[in-house]
Every structure is written in structure tokens, then in C-alpha cells.
Image (cartoon, rainbow, N blue to C red):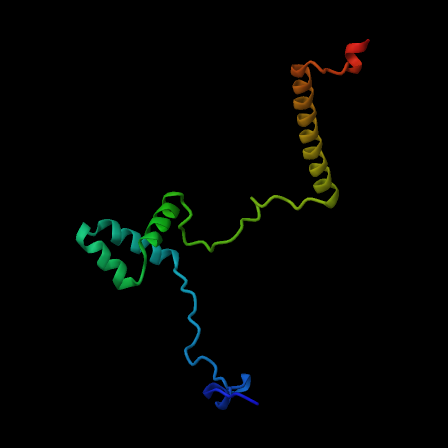
Length: 135
């Protein structure tokens, strides 16, 4: 005996039958430094009641203005293209240098742990004579 439900009688759409989304994928907006400076200036000079209207008109958020104002104040909002400055980029470290730094950090941590353990043993009265104390 076979029991069928109404959903069993309807054909299921296959993967190939589905249409692609007709809406194009939105692209990320890019703002020029000049535009950012103009918007920050206009926003800061606007009376309190009109600041929201500027944001709505331009499709911006207040966080944009805050970020751009900070960049302007830090001197990063110039007409120069953004990107890492080769003169400030540190040189790449070799595999040996990376391993050496890792081992130094590990040694420092183990030394610190050993010091803490010795202090705890001294407090408990179970101090083990150290090599330098025995002589």
C-alpha cells in the first residue's frame, strides 16, 4: 500500500530550471579624497537640523563622516592614492628569524613559569636546593 500526498504529485524543480537572480550585484562605492573632504566640510558647516538631510541626499552614514574627519585630522586624506608606503613597510623576515623570535618568546615564557613555580615551592616550604645555593 502506497500513501501519496499532494506534494508528491507536484514535479520538483530541478537545479537547471532555476533562473539566475535578475538583479545585478551591487558594486562597492569608491569615494575620492576630494569628495570626502567636501562632504566633511559641508556636514560640519551645516546647521544641526540639516545634517541628516545631507547624509540622506548623498546616501551616506554618519560613520562615514566620522571616519573621514578622523582621516582628515590625521593628514591621511590627501589626493594621494591609498596603499602601503614602501618606505614604511618593514622588510620581510626569513624563516630562521621567525623561528628564532618564536623560540625566544617560548624561552621567556618558560623562564617566567619556572620562576613562579620556584616561588610557590619556597612559600610552601618545599624548596629544592638550587645549584647556586648548594655551593
